Length: 114
Image 1 (cartoon, one colour):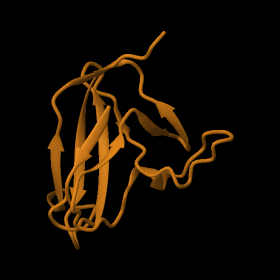
Image 2 (image 1 turned 45 degrees about the vertical axis):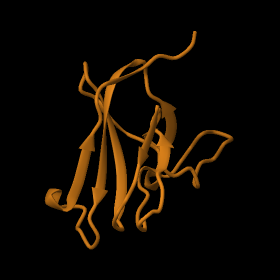
Image 3 (image 1 turned 135 degrees about the horizontal axis):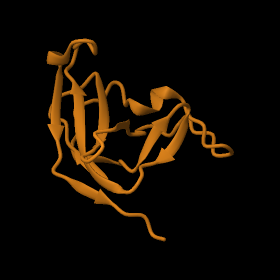
Image 4 (image 1 turned 90 degrees about the vertical axis):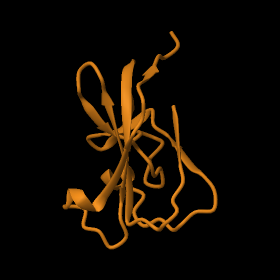
């Protein structure tokens, strides 16, 4: 799955949380692959953030089928999910829930080829 979004205003951070609708287990999507070590698939925990984003002229997008798993990148297991896009308002504090704008997608399924 790919998530597309558009920012009319700058943001202090962007994150995506994907939740399995059956088990309610949540995963933080990998949004920044700049710290990915392709030899062993290790990655920094900062990979789940985009941090400061300027206003954009078009859509931005990223895959949401991979998640941060204790220092490594892993694929989401098969199942039905929703994704929540979280955007931190300019000058907002990450610790305050009211400073985040959120959007939750309709359900979608992930099925991997055999």
